[in-house]
Amino acid sequence: MSDETLENKLQNIRNKAAEFAKAKANRVYLEEFRKSKIAILMREAESADPDLTAANRQEAWARRHPEYLELLKGLMQATEEEARLHWELRTAEWAVEIWRTKSANKRAERMRYGA
Image (cartoon, rainbow, N blue to C red; front, top):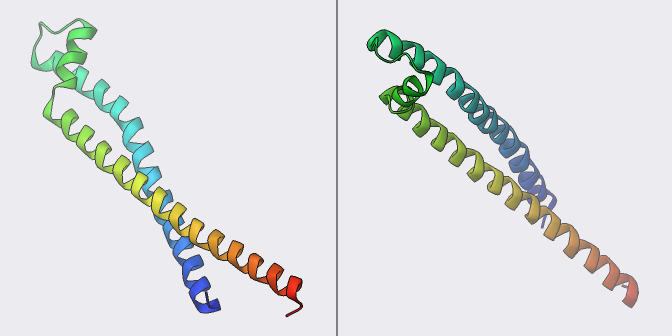
């Protein structure tokens, strides 16, 4: 692998690391917001139907609310994006590690044969 190719791979790792950080932050935000959304919708449930005074009935109403279900879809997409970027990052790291191993093996072979 040439120095230029190696630098490209390292730049790819830096880019993927930044993308991964954003994707993870997005996923964590959605996980935390999900808790707030349940609370918001539970309060809305009580306003929508005065018979919904029990917390478990309010929560059931909130969890089947279209806004909550849409949030879950967003969380699913965010988790998928984070996982995809994680493995792209790992693959790029492995490519550099393979190059390092091959380079070390070539150096060792040259030393053994005095080349």
